[in-house]
Length: 70
Length: 70
DNA sequence: ACGCAACACGAAGTTTAACTTCGTTACGAC
DNA sequence: GTCGTAACGAAGTTAAACTTCGTGTTGCGT
Image (cartoon, rainbow over all chains, first blue to last red; front, top):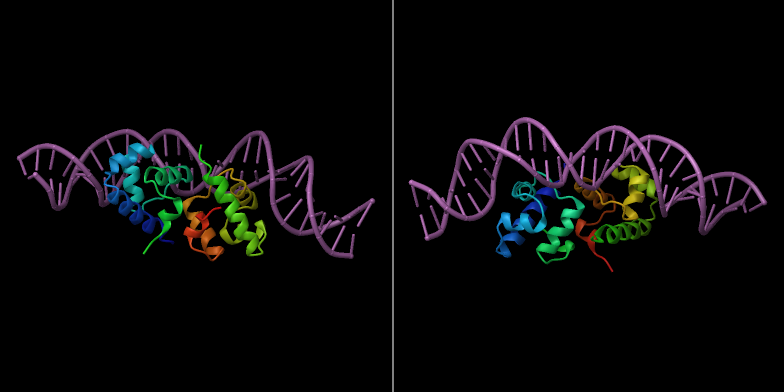
C-alpha cells in the first residue's frame, strides 16, 4: 500500500492554509464538496486527474509543486 | 478544458522510451492493459491516483518528475 | 516483398474509486 | 456557550479509469 494519498493530502492542506483558504472556499473554487476536500486532505482518496488540475489552478501553483513532499 | 492529460501523456511516453520499455512492459509492471497505457500517453484519460503511484515506481522516478513539462 | 513488433485509434462494456449526501463529534476562538 | 472550521463514518451515486474486443498503420529486420 502506497502512501502517496497521505503525503499529497498533507501537501494540499499546507498549501491551502498558506493561501489562507478554508476547505469550503477551496471546494467551491475547485467545484467539489467540502467532504471531498476533507477526504483528500486526510488521504482517504486522491483527486481525479481533472480535479488535480483544478486544485493546482485554484492554488495558483504548478501541478508539480503539489507533489513536493518532506 | 485543461491540457494536463496531454502533457502528462507526452511526459510518460518520453520517460518510458528513455527507459527503453515498450507499452506492454510498462503495462505489465504497472498492472494495467496496454490499451490503458496507450490511452494515457495519448491524453485520452489520466491515470488513477493508485496507478500514478505505480507508474512512478516502475519508472523509478518521483511522482513530481512525472509533471515536469516543456 | 514479406512478416512481425509496436503502437495508434474506435466503440462499447465493466468496474473502481472519486465524489456526494446525509449526519455526528470535536475543538479552538471570540 | 455558540460559531466557524474541520475530522470522521456510512451508504449511496456517478464519473472516469480501465477492459475487451477489433482494425489500421508504421517502421524495421530479413
